[in-house]
Image (cartoon, rainbow, N blue to C red):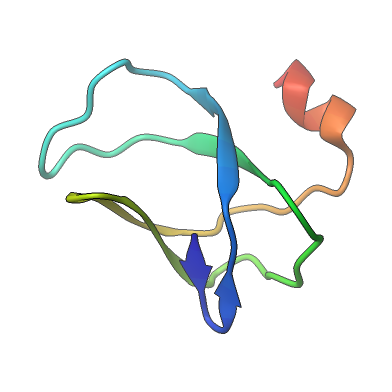
Length: 71
């Protein structure tokens, strides 16, 4: 995940569809794997793995993993 100066691996916890194609939109929830990071709603981010890339916008931030898993 790339967001400003943040470069860290994340785990996607929730995504509503199994397959997204070019131009598709969806909400997803992810969790930083190693360290907490300072990010704010409204920041742009990039997720990438190999040739797959996801561009997005941070809509909300939570520090409670239990709250994230229940949504």
